[in-house]
Amino acid sequence: MKNIFAKITAIAATSVAIAAGANNPAQALELNFNWQGDAGYSATGSFSYDETTAPTIISETGSGATNFLQSLNVSFLDPSKNILGTYNTVSGGVSESSFFAFNFNTSTQTLFGPFDVAGGTGVIGEYFFQGTVGDSLFLRQDVNQQDTSITLDQNFGSIQVSKVPEPASLLGLLAFAGLGVASTLKKKQGSC
Image (cartoon, rainbow, N blue to C red; front, top):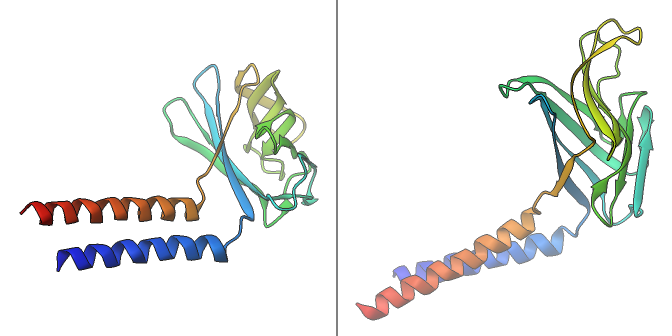
């Protein structure tokens, strides 16, 4: 009875993984980014774009409809890992900030050039992350909305990007694991 249940589970998991891959062709690709400042502040976020229509170089600036980015969010943490603020800079393909700057190479999956995300909506005390990737990046806090801000942290422009695993890939991995469990159960039943 256990053998039948294991086989049914493995077949079901495999079927779900195949169906998810067939019914959900690759569209929105989601990536994470992480930044660590020299004084211990950090930024972590994610962004997504439609990989079927995006060019090799994605460059976005200013407020309003974006060309290719579907979303971009970022959270800032102090050295004790307390969240200072979370911002949805791009939501539903629309940027909220006139200061927004984003450049990404889809081929190498690296950020480059001018970078400005988070605040920019006119709220005193908001945080923003700006600079030039590969040169210097700064975490700042607005003081008075009159071009006065304080720098909380910075680094020499290093920022890491990593791909978020697709759900279909995770389902496929689960299906593969299910087959391994089924095989192990079958071997155990045969040895008893």
